[in-house]
Length: 295
Image (cartoon, rainbow, N blue to C red; front, top):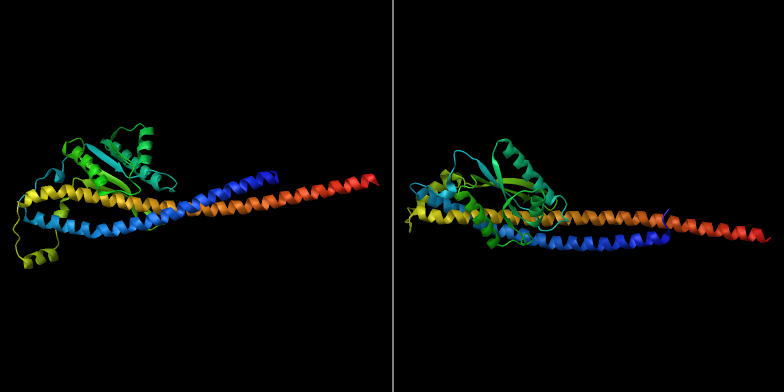
């Protein structure tokens, strides 16, 4: 049985750990609120971008752009897992990596080759440890991603796609639902789906009422400039979703850690009281035995 002093040291150590986990929970909660605000602010921009591309796509007579090219035979696929730069976030990183490797196994079973573009230190270190060759690695911004970070990732995957090194690009990330729930999502970002160039009957009727537009330069050229921006926006949105998911997962993990630390402290305190009582009882017995020996 541990001594009273040992139990006191353990209780002090667990209390210090609980202070750290509580502080990390508060920091994650503050970052989560900012991430939620950034997601909300991006939505109008993303919706307007979709409407603009659809409008220009209707005006274009023929659309043959590299980012829209649907290849008949898909031989190589690039997987882009969005992980964090730090741990202590529960299963946030593990579930993205697990889904990415499951996708890799499925593609290899179909006799397709796989390329990797890592986003986040945790994903990069895992892929490097498992001896996967990386076509790109982007680190150091997952806590607060900027649009320039999404541009860098988009430029690299677009380069891989347009050069023919890969025929498809899949993004794997956590979609933010709530602080307690994050859902792993697989999203094909290249080739860009032709569905974004289509609109429903209500939007088409609204355009008719507004009248015809005169495009300068030609719609095809405008669309060629807009599609890379659309790709960047999709990746930026995924980065923001991933950031919010990471902070939500970390806040939940640290709250559970603080709760567990409290339970450990209660258990250790009970053990310490029992040990102290045993020491007192032992001392009383020794005093009584000494007194009896003197009589």
